[in-house]
Length: 116
Image (tube, rainbow, N blue to C red; front, side):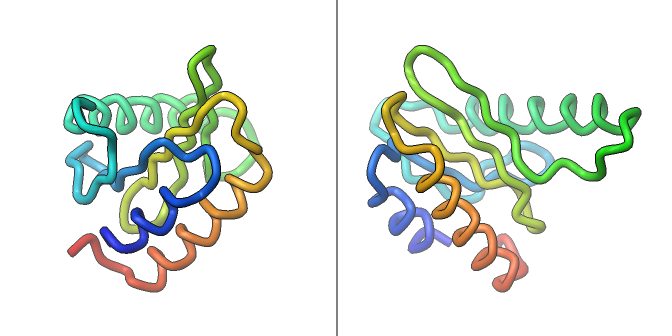
């Protein structure tokens, strides 16, 4: 898993990434020094939980991806089956290209099928 995150972080505009279990535990991370990965894991788990709960009353299907845009960049959360892939980007990053890379990484994580 670490290798997948390392490859993903080489993408243009990607600042960091991590894989979080459904309980919010960080399983693997590639983040800048000083970033509190455990806090990010908890925030990611909360965002997904409340988003899924909110969508359950709307007939749009299961949540596949959540994108949060802020002045300092974006947070992309994607369901990887075995957990959640969380990706941080700079604000100027090409969202389309980043989403392609996120999708490819999710596919590879699903093939792996485990958080170990």
